[in-house]
Length: 270
Ligand SMILES: Nc1ncnc2c1ncn2[C@@H]1O[C@H](COP(=O)(O)OP(=O)(O)OP(=O)(O)O)[C@@H](O)[C@H]1O
Image (cartoon, rainbow, N blue to C red; front, side):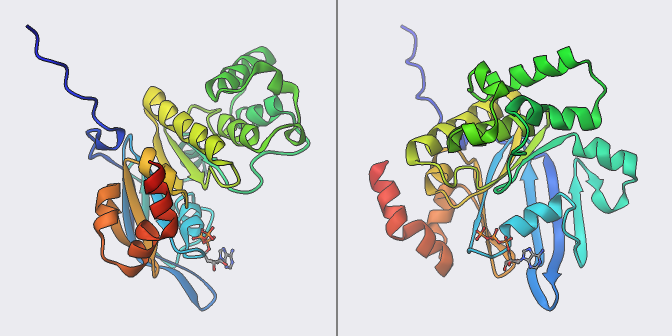
């Protein structure tokens, strides 16, 4: 008789690649006298979903924007795909930017453009394609994020919060990126909508082989979708690892975050 099949391996225990796709080394970022990131180091591995948590106002978005080259740093080095962002010419820089997609927390979509036009915006900026080809891509992305085709002609104001997030994700995926940056993707969604969005991120990560850098406060997301978590406090990454590693960590902020009342409610619900 055949041996019984082994039980499925939980997602976050997937064998992860050790290929570093984003390397942040010793970066210092500040505004005026105020230092936000203080000699911070972080690696993101190819194909993982990294959840990035930390104190409110601690600098999670600033780090994301620093990696993207949108915030100047005082010192340190950021490499993406092995390329030092400070040593790229304009052509190399735009070639690199085509390899990542971003879903910002605010202002996810252009309000005066339809969903289809929003998705086509990055295509128009970077590629010369026929309208027919751009329409095909837009409809493929709309389907990919679980929206119905009739959403294509709608304005953002006609969509629910969850649909807006999906449409914004479709736009982030327009150029078939290898990395997606998500800044609090489930904020403002109800728990069911947030859970559905987490599932979508996991499915896309698996089917497209994406690497996902996700800033989040959402404990459910950290439990269900993240392969690894990194935590920011006092301008540094104070801990990183699986959810179990984070729950065993002794840093007072981590203890409060992963064992506080909200965490207990999430655990109980699971
Ligand atoms: N362009 C800027 N000029 C001055 N200060 C800034 C700028 N951008 C961010 N900050 C400050 O840097 C700090 C970190 O901001 P950031 O948005 O990265 O925090 P966060 O960890 O993402 O917070 P939250 O979880 O509340 O979204 C905040 O005090 C913010 O006010």
